[in-house]
Image (cartoon, rainbow, N blue to C red; front, side):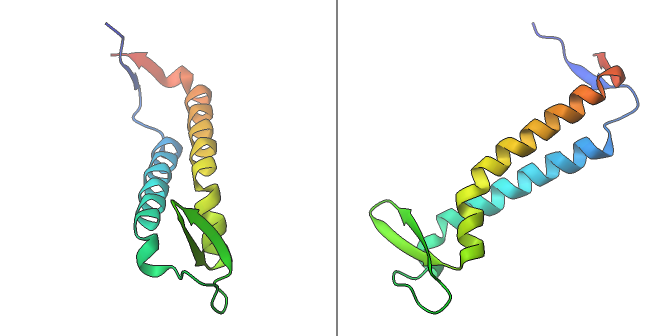
Length: 97
């Protein structure tokens, strides 16, 4: 059976903050991708010029939103790496449960 680890003096604030950002980023990105067909245009209209291919359909959204949706998964991996870095930096505070 694997040993459980816990922090001696409670969970550091940075660990809680990065964990919350990871969860929030996942929820926002997932909900935007699910509702893309409801709010995105099928044709480039006005400032909605960023094309996103979803299945067989092409949707056009604002460029800032398109960049967020295309890089959101990579942001999750970067945040996970930062979370592991915080864990490694605070390894002296870890103890077996």
